[in-house]
Image 1 (cartoon, rainbow over the protein chains, first blue to last red):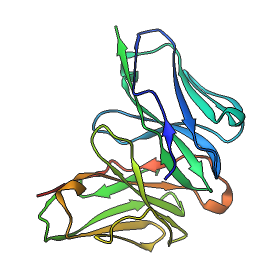
Image 2: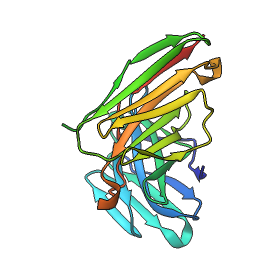
Image 3: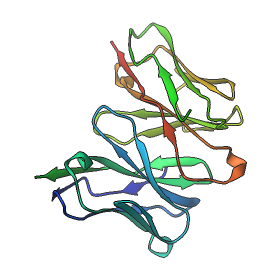
Image 4: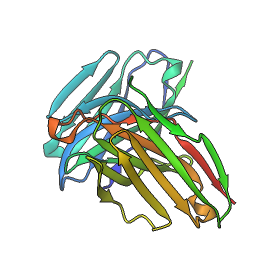
Length: 109
Length: 116
């Protein structure tokens, strides 16, 4: 499979902004998705970047730079319910999705 | 209906048992996936079906045998598993491959497998 690297853990306070980075391998790369997973739950889709630039969906934004093999998820106005694991997922050779190492986000009051 | 339904939710089996996991979606998606997820780890891609044909097998041991009987159903047949195969098995689907990608996988809640 392909290797996508993320920080293992991030901690922030309610109301803050946090950025979760993802670096990926470029061979066969098609696009980058982001997923949220609460403990005991299934991954849920947040965002997808097929092109370079910023995609905004409410409090969540995602960015992709193909020239840097890098993307990030930006979470604004953090809430306690945002405490979860966040995964980037690279799409390779169309419809083949490999998940990143995952980042556990802890939101504190 | 935007659901992917997996059964059973929990399964305990011995190393000599044969069991199956089932997955169903009625969104008209023509790509379906099996992922394996161990605790505190990312989902690992196992198999991809595209238009009911196996398109990707990520070097999964033959004790896992996928099947796609029709465009709505995906099975994972299990035989002679090892304790290290204990994990959450996630099924997912995505829209028709030849309609372009949205990058979105729709996941079921998973089947939690314990091998004794």
